[in-house]
Length: 291
Image (cartoon, rainbow, N blue to C red; front, side):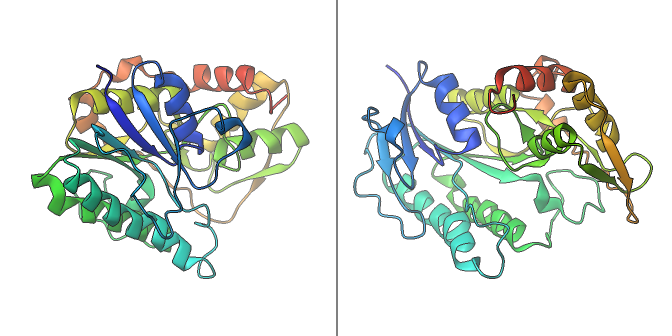
């Protein structure tokens, strides 16, 4: 019998990738704020506004919840603080309560690497983090809300670092692609710019799949092990596009955002990850919106 998964944020970048990659493996109930025209044929689409969630119409025999929903207003603080808090924090609390009552076995929460702000310590899951931005504080709050429920269900939290891939919009890598295509200058702080570990969407979904199948517990950094500078990243994109990126020297210092992956290595073979080169090539080849 197929495992039944309740997938929130199903119309988002990661949610769509999860559904299309795993719809033959799981029975997925996709929770969205608003149905799109293309959703009408899917009998497992559930409308739910997480600013005031009502779960009466949710199925009662769910095996796992993959909670990807987050506020689209995360950049609009303080004007949209209520929306950010309601979707990122209050809805997580309500969903955890519902999951416990319904005896759901597994709860997976998508968090963010930005809970480690200002990135002054080693990015290890066990450190006590006090992030700076309102968005990151709400994501850390959602993580903390999970703790008391660990006695009732398996809870796995992923801190995501720079996911990218086909269909993504208005994030770091698609914005870099647009800048290089249009000849816009890209600001580099320091010699090479920020150091980061971009994670290709297929690798991210493979790990969510493993966690769903095996009921993982605990907090895991989820990132590529390959550390790359912003300058090198832009040059790789430019090489694939056949365009030379233009750079502007900034006055700030560069950040090094390299999470520890020791916990993740204990449960998943990171050699299966795409290299940044291969991930970018697939993204640029397959994403028709880029061409």
